Image 1: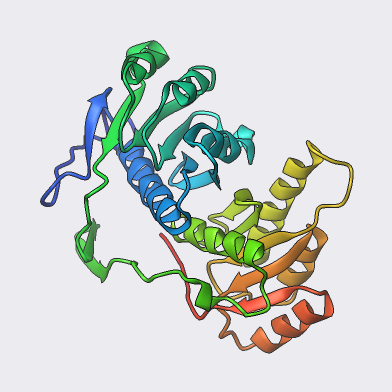
Image 2: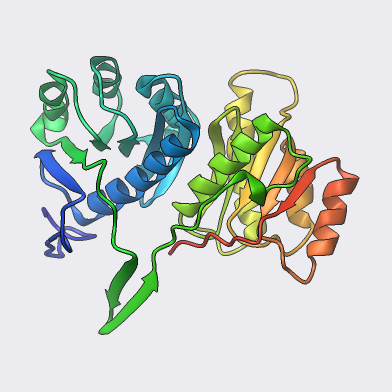
Length: 302
């Protein structure tokens, strides 16, 4: 690798067994690899669940945006459109091979690299010319399955845990949730799984329109996600934002999260539940006409 988390840190990488990707062009940094592998997991899981292309725009190991699309270029355009300010200099992850249409779009935006399961003829040459020839192009191995156990070493301690591979399925959601909202909530759960905690994800029409990531306070996550969602909507309409699905990676501890969500057009919430105040949260949702799904699944990521 070029360097570690910072240029003054030397770094290297080696596969545990079989490499999950190949470096096609450029040289990765430590954070490039973290963004690439996290983003690839997100889009791979989303594409498998929904059967359409998925894309994510990653910055500092959290997505600035993620979306589904009818084509790979549409998925990425929607992912980057969620928060274009934060997507500046992003690392791109897409679930399907990169075609010339996506390559042409990437030529015109500021981006640091991409991971995809393949590249059409002529695409790598176009991408490799970006950033004065330093644009990073990684090819994911779509057949790679990671080890069941994850290992991390920090300050002389080795931590191990079972990889988070719990299926995220429709039966986690309340029966009252309509199909379109269920799709958005399930996409939100996938996005939350691959976002730095604490996180709240707001989704509309198969697109994460607001992600509040890495906050210590959950209501700050909700507020941040809501402000991003509101800004996204303001570029399209003067009408109130409605029909938004919201996912929280951890239990909502107070009803202020529900009130804040309602301000930003949220009509469906999925969260782990199980908090001492979850009955109050459920009642607040009912009062505001929000469906509430207590999934029983926490999706922390650090």
